[in-house]
Image: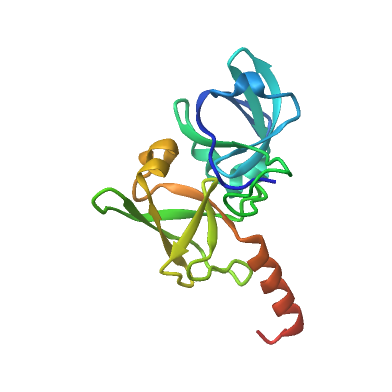
Length: 199
C-alpha cells in the first residue's frame, strides 16, 4: 500500500531479459535502507526488491506487467518515481494507492503556466475506470487531484516542487504514463454495475 507521495527519483542502470520476465537494476538514494522482498512503487507499479548490491538493487517485472504498464518503454537512463510502502501509523498525505496499474495513458499536452505546469492525458475509457472532478488519480505513482474530467481524459496541475522532484520534468506530449484509478471509485462502480446490470 502506498500514498502517491514520491520519495525519490531512481535511475535504470541495466536491463536483462529472463524468458518473458525483465529485470531492472536500479540506482536509488535510499538503496541502503531497502531489504530483500520489500515492495517499492516504481512509476506506480509495485515491484519486489530481489537483490541489493551497494547503491544498486534489482526488481523483476513479469510479462503481464510489461504489457499493461510503461515499463516496456524503460531504457538505461530512464528516471523513475520511487516510493516505499506506507507506514500504517503515519499521515496519509496523498490517497490510498495499491501499486496496481489499471492502464497506460498518453500525455496529450503540456503547458507552462508561469511557475506551474498543466498536463492533460488521454486513456481508453472503460466502465470500471472512472474519474470525478477534483477527485484523486495516480499518475506514474504520483497522487494528484484531477480536473477537466471527461470519459477518456483529464488534466492535472503540477506545482514546481512536484515538477522538480518527480519524473514529470522529463514528461512530454506523446509519452506513456501509468494510471491507477481511485480504489474507492472502482468499488463504487463495481457495486453500481452489479445492482444496475442494464448500465
